Length: 147
Image 1 (cartoon, helix red, strand yellow):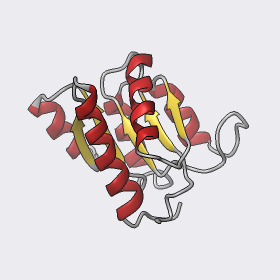
Image 2 (cartoon, rainbow, N blue to C red):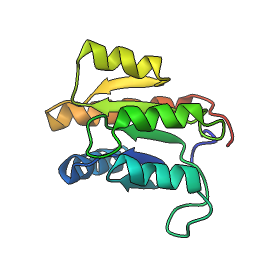
Image 3 (cartoon, one colour):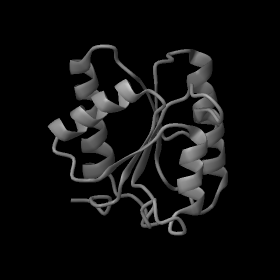
Image 4 (cartoon, rainbow, N blue to C red):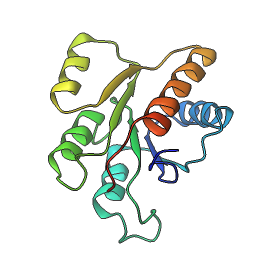
């Protein structure tokens, strides 16, 4: 079991339906980490930049961030750029999880420092498969920095 075993997984997702489906997929694969949802980029940055100061948020940084791109307000690209520019946050793996398969979006996210880019599948069984891969690789296989 990796050092990420008890840190939360932060899901930044504006769609309640998509978050519900993600939650089901995480539970099916017996994810032990708590799953936190931020409904927009502003809320995600409030947690990440102020962790430990607001009692509504965990006092630890997440093991990984699963980040949607297209959200109202501060979008995923801006959140990614801010995370990767902040020395306290830059080592947190950020996995873009978006419906966009646009080559320009993919390239821009990697240029901004994304650790991975996955396209959200439409079918639930395909979503389960991608979540299983995320859990196995990012939370069970790799060695993540201690933050």
